[in-house]
Amino acid sequence: MNILFVHQNFPGQFRHLAPHLQRLGHQVQALGIGGPGLPGGNMRRYKPRRLSSDSIHPWVREFEIKVIRGDACAHAARALNTSGFRPDVTIANPGWGESIYLKQAARLVAVERYDLETVCLPKQVQLVESLADGAQMKN
Image 1: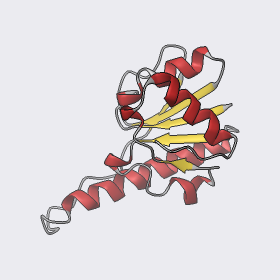
Image 2 (image 1 turned 45 degrees about the horizontal axis):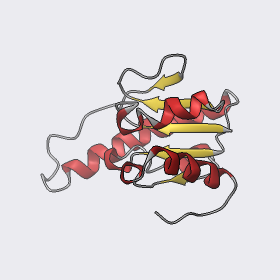
Image 3 (image 1 turned 30 degrees about the horizontal axis):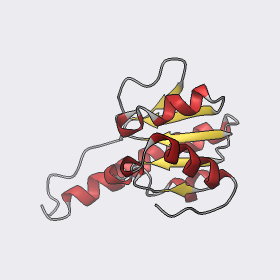
């Protein structure tokens, strides 16, 4: 199964799940701004094209930077898609904005946003595999 992880500081909270899925034989790719990545894993780095505007209202500054990150990540996802990697499941940390445009920009199969930190590793693997099969599990 092809699995795409998206986290600005990959592996982030996926530091146990991503290598475990690799050991099970799944193709694991990642998109991120920084972070150490995974040994033997493929990580495509992207960089936001600009920072938040100086003149923007302070209450929307955080939203703007998330949109900027989402745009940069969408460009990286398009490049990954063009290279031939088609994820069966995409797992993203939605807190940084990267996943905002993924589904539309790269025509990804599914962008799932689950709180994987609240379940144990075997349950995480079961959830990921069920998403690839099109089933939905309740946390």
